[in-house]
View 1 (spheres, rainbow, N blue to C red):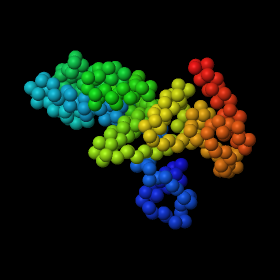
View 2: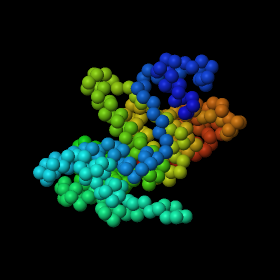
View 3: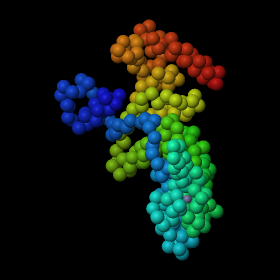
Length: 315
Ligand SMILES: [Zn+2]
């Protein structure tokens, strides 16, 4: 996917075919796409300065809300006062990290809560400014779900948070350092922030350019690796949502629950590795499940049977 499909789409836009070196013959339909995006499980930030609130770009808006308070105006606090990345408002003991690194000889370094701010990342003066009874430090300690409720009257903050709640990330803290997120959480956060950017782009195209927005192509390689069953269901919901919004999603996957949810399957085999690489079956999950050439078919048939049984009993 990374070495064929991704470059093929990009090269077709650039109209530069690198002769001889490319692994594909022909690609069509890319004129209906506006972007291609590969979503993996890699961390979204390596430092504790990267948090869900900054990743989905609502922290700037929250800081603006704080700077507009009468208390802030009297003291001359602007939005940068409420940043933990710059000097002025942040706790200088931990440089706004909330945690202090303990370096010990012969032992792996560990982190402890900062004494100066008790993990709140800001200095005492900054923390006395309160928005509806909460300091900027309190807000970073809220879960996404609590924050969504708290900021309900502020749509620019509420909507992205609500999207995160709907995709099962409501339990994460707004200020949770990104390196502590699991691969599955990082992946979902990426998909949601992409979904949000996509919605904004759609609106822009419809209003400003008066034309139907193009779709984005999302590529995911075995996104369910390391995920619990419940996380797989949540991932499927985000993927369905991306498709419902008019995007295309291509997933390389062995997980039958994901395969059964696809609109179209390309079954490659018959064996793994060097004994595979051939297209053995294509079609909807129902079509592939009765294809005798496919090794996956009997397993897929069983999952589909369970799924259909479930929907019949639900109906
Ligand atoms: Zn501190």
